[in-house]
Amino acid sequence: DIQMTQSPSSLSASVGDRVTITCRASQGISYYLAWYQQRPGRVPKLLIYGASTLQSGVPSRFSGSGSGTDFTLTISSLQPEDVATYYCQKYNSAPLTFGGGTKVEIK
Amino acid sequence: EVQLVQSGAEVKKPGESLKISCKGSGYSFISYWIGWVRQMPGKGLEWMGIIYPGDSDTRYSPSFQGQVTISADKSISTAYLQWSSLKASDTAIYYCARVASITYWYFDLWGRGTLVTVSS
Image 1 (cartoon, rainbow over the protein chains, first blue to last red):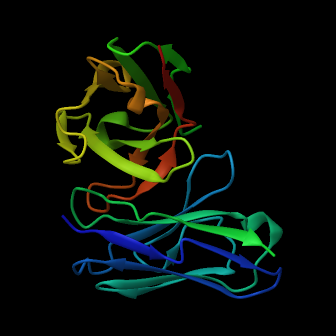
Image 2 (tube, rainbow over the protein chains, first blue to last red; image 1 turned 120 degrees about the vertical axis):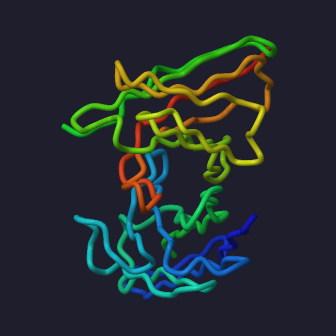
């Protein structure tokens, strides 16, 4: 089965900083990659699908890129409400594995 | 309103059985796969499996195959996750989530989660 590896596992940045999270698949998955945000104590929320398509209602400071095995989620200007854990997920075929998560905090 | 409503929190003893539910409303329940995701305390998301309520086609993660049973009753727009013999390590929040489309299997709608606590 394909493994999904996220890095870093956690990061601390200042408000307004540009933040980048990476997700690597152990085999190519084309563009079948989604990103989710889970704020503390909340339900996961879809941010991006198709590696780069923003879900309706998601702020434009979020963006995704990549295809094949290497993907990134970028927050262009970190806001206090972005404190959360972010997960990638492959969905080209079952099992629909999640990455281990990246916890984003404010410095 | 399009939503998934999950059953309430459960407290069980090791060895007991359990079936939790996820009811879809506001959309055609039989036309979308429904998945289950585990989140153990302080840990990440784990994909357990998915079911297509239209014909009960089910796919399991290798990690959960044989450990749980996923089912659905399309007549009442409800999906289920069940255990025959719970273990303390089953303590977690369990989310159901709707798969976005037949072709693209990401989750676009999530239930609020069911907390399952297994303790003697």
